[in-house]
Image 1: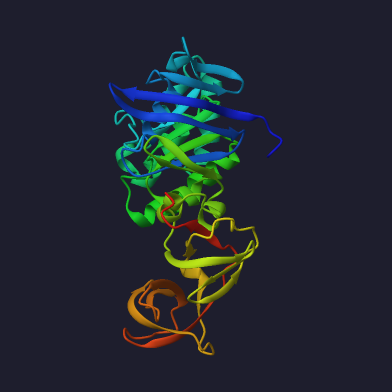
Image 2: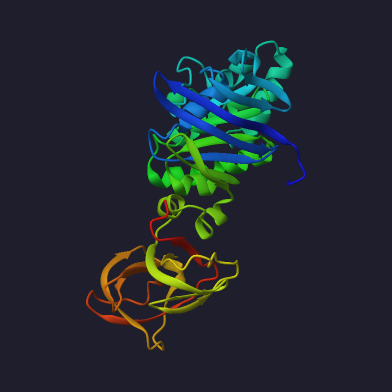
Length: 353
């Protein structure tokens, strides 16, 4: 994929409402067939980025290009209906008086009846609703309605598909299942897409690349694995996953020392500055080991079925989290043996944003 030219290229995007800057010099690119996600808390500007790509908002600076065609640039604004961009909203907006087949066919204006029917059948097959085109939206489940909304957006073969918090009206279990299904549908159809969500699990389940947004900027645009294991900023480290920061210091460019011992880092550590550093430990870095001489006190526990997340207090009073298989059932107040098993040593200077 790395050699593919970007299908979506956003460079230096700026947008404000009055004095309030909503998008602040934002850039990203997405290759053809990739699924991207803008992830962030409400008010960070992620939906505004989608609206600028769709053409519903006039960006005040920067460029948006899709498949080499400029959609938006200083003095240039292609109207939404000419952009060949599909959109799926959180409320689906299916037409209640039209059956499923007619809902999907709605975007196929200009196609012959035969072409339209063939495309609708193809999409019903893709979304797992073959043979059910005559049903009405109220006769199918919320998850099925969402898949129909997706099929309707895919029908005219958009260059790019935008999904705005598409699962927010569904319960947690259905969201998890549907996010997997939507990824599979997008991949099978070879669709390039951008999803907006505040839900990290959803972002990780659907997207190839995730941009963590904060105050109109992207802090890091990366694969989910790298966001979790190699966050570039303290904000990303805090926002993605769980974890705890412990004080430590660098011994050399690949070694740090902290309360739980000496850690070797695969990637080099900036050790020019003798200032103290904070070391990020994820729950999967702290391993329960009965044979270890190093112990910690269980101060809290969350049972997750297959595993516990223990909050452990160290000798210094600092606390870390540990992910432990659930057959290791320990009471609050008990001391357990632990060891550190961290491939990715993530450090931040004390006071680094």
